[in-house]
Length: 319
Length: 319
Image (cartoon, rainbow over all chains, first blue to last red; front, side, top):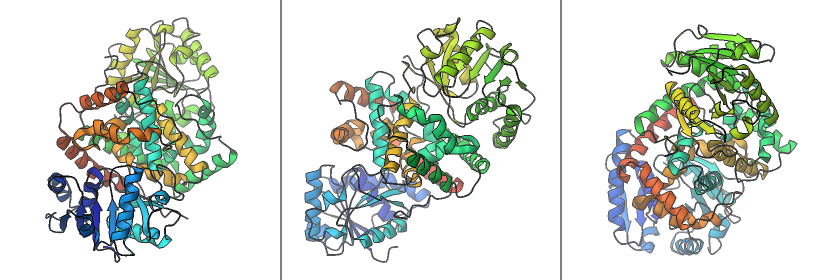
């Protein structure tokens, strides 16, 4: 448990808000929720009842999920005792800014105000706050109670100590906080997802494949590897003994080809060096044969797991 | 075993060529390999010896991997008896075209000539062939002996029966053939990977994150989901009861935002409808609660598997 944070308030109880509630409760925190929608409380409790068996069966949560949970119908009451507020209102800049400014008015001075925004920069979200130093972005991934990644982003006015306290807190709930070095629209992970998403829409729009075929082109191929390795390490392990150095030589020229609608940066010597040395550092001294053996064993077990949990997509093509 | 195909020849024995050799041998086919590089045979045998224990320990291959394997030092001898030739020479258009034209000269009329090219269209590769109808692209994913996806692409001159024979053959070696409806640079999967790859290079180039942090932003987050669901089903399951219909409403406007350097297509009513009905069809009548429960159970087991097989990346940020 965090030493600084005891009471958490979740503002906005859509899919992401409920996901946070589940993760906080599973880790033993006191959680208060607020959402102005009619029947919001009922919906939260129904969703928690559906999520809980999987968590309990895997020893990820205590049995009773309502013991530490309160729902409030006034924002003021919901945030009054909060040490940490997680905001999850709909993704509209004006709405997020005004809700965050209101939370800023209603909370203790040192309460951390954390936004789940998928894309807005914290500097924008904190601009109407008196105590703007405690406003950060903590961007999670659905389902929040299982996926460990959370991107922490500081705005221009954010106090670095707040980032540290948030990191410590997220580690206390078994998450993997990734501190984003410079704020940018879409942070890091959503920029990568958005690139895939936009290219997918182009492919469907151009009649190259159906949504199901696009999905199949991920889940039976690169998606299996991405559970273990990101785009850099994946290529590093596809390059033989020379790893990324070979791959940049082999596929560098393809950056100029129309293999996607996205234009690449110029592959300068400086960028190439950053990429190669980055990959080499990531392997923590394991040699290629060790890395490949480990990857292969993982992939064999993963393909069995996928087989067990998902029906084969229809790949008959030319339907 | 395929009824049409008994003898397979692999031309070019880099990482992909060796991956194919391993998959063909594991499935009981006779395999002949050719590569003009010095020590190529030795390298193939060494790599097979490293791959084999994982396959045997998981009952994916017979113990003896050399029984059905021959290496030839002349292309002519290597392809003379081939029913199926898989070409894996370096990714250069002129080289691929000339090697494929040579194979076309040296093989029986009905031998399938299949290229592993990551990005070139088969119409280009078949242009210098006499019997161009038997030329296709069959694009695999590293490691080829484990990853099931293979994209089959026909060129303008490709005989549809050849596509069918190739599909039947790949199914006989436990692969998931995805027939690409229209040829396009980068096929489907590489276009998606290339979009992520280019955006990743921009992020590193702009100093937003290191290669390790970019990789972490995939493996601890969206990468876990992509082992099970592609970009469409992932969003469909993040949209609550309304699924993709809600997500397009919520995040459609974000297509105009600079969340990636890739520009999106116009989200017309027609495209939106294609995407929504596509996702609904993919769920094969399972309701959201069932799909979410299955996804959650899968993700819990997968995160355990990742924990077991990969060292945590360094996420300390602001290093």
